Image 1 (cartoon, helix red, strand yellow):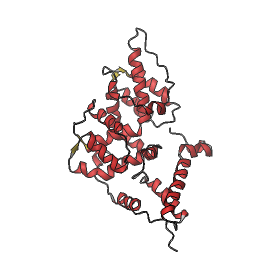
Image 2: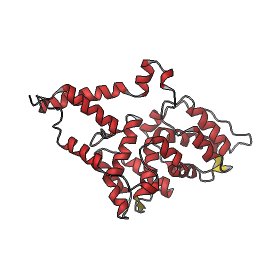
Image 3: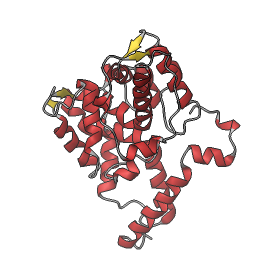
Image 4: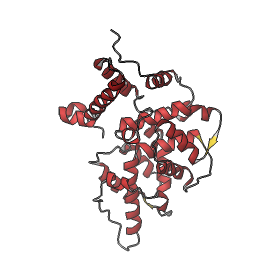
Length: 288
């Protein structure tokens, strides 16, 4: 949600930025680190922790529950994945679903396989376990699938309800779901079950806008959704997903990946330094 921070109360701002989540994790990490390093300097350790959060390197080698816990964590993880494995794209290598999942597990050991499958469905519109895809195509589809996972589950439910309503001779009427995206997420439904013939873009946009108006989860800018859904009278679910994955407006909104044409131009020096700190956590030790 794009809310002016100066219009928020202190409590609302802390909640919107997940500050308490990071404070709790920082203290937990400090206590764990202190068991192996009794001379650790707490102030220095906490400083390093929050610098890492600010730079987006804090999700390296962390468990999935932490990686997906906040929008900043998700976006940071996507950027780390790009930084670590961009050489695959530079070399022109093509990988399949299991190979991309293996790469993700190098950064997050318990990263779920179903998210990689759903990413492949955005590209191929089917499971396509053995189909090969480029790093760039996978990366931008993965960014949309992972960062907007809750939003996409809501859109999938809306899409299917509109398909069902279209069987009636009356005009389709959208009824908001009583199930939260987090409840749906516990048992993810295969997105390839969506009907292929498409739905009316106007009805779909109206329904999505209603759900997003008070949503606590991350969703694309409404201006981008309007532009995407006003470009044709009807849209299939996979046409919608592909449009999101290819949108530079959405990429700019997440603010972690460069434009596709600049994907291999930036330096990896900042990430190399971050990996060294995680592998050899000596910072924060009081040498006095």
